[in-house]
Length: 194
Image 1 (spheres, rainbow, N blue to C red):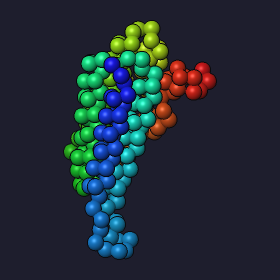
Image 2: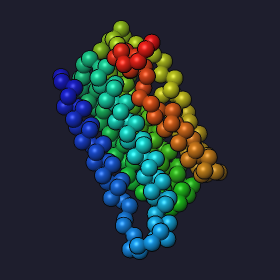
Image 3: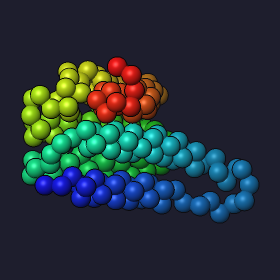
Image 4: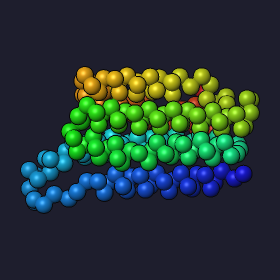
């Protein structure tokens, strides 16, 4: 099976996710800065979600570049990831519209947690399809950053009910952790020194 169709479909879904998130921000009726103030929470949640979509797109691209084969299990694992990412516009809008209230912040974290688990599953299904000695399997290793992200998201969900700002800082911290494309993939591709 060719992986280019999987990549093209994923790119299209992620482009739609970004577009839907942007459409959630309604243009204010006033022309002054005071008309923008109510949009600030929605804008900040949009920026965080845009960052996350960009991170997933970038790391997905690198991982697919390293992957050598695609099979039916990979296709379903990829759809599982896209499912969670497609929920980002709703979670982003609800969190922003409600000024980072506890339940919307927790739901946002749950979507991020679902996406992180789905990405981990996709990575391991891709590695299994290629074999234990494949470049991808070697690059993934123990996936400490992936496992740490899952733990931090779960912690953020719990914190959302006590201190929403702390949950938001955890979500931002995980995004910053992944901001640079996955160096494990770059090393295997020869893009960076070992």
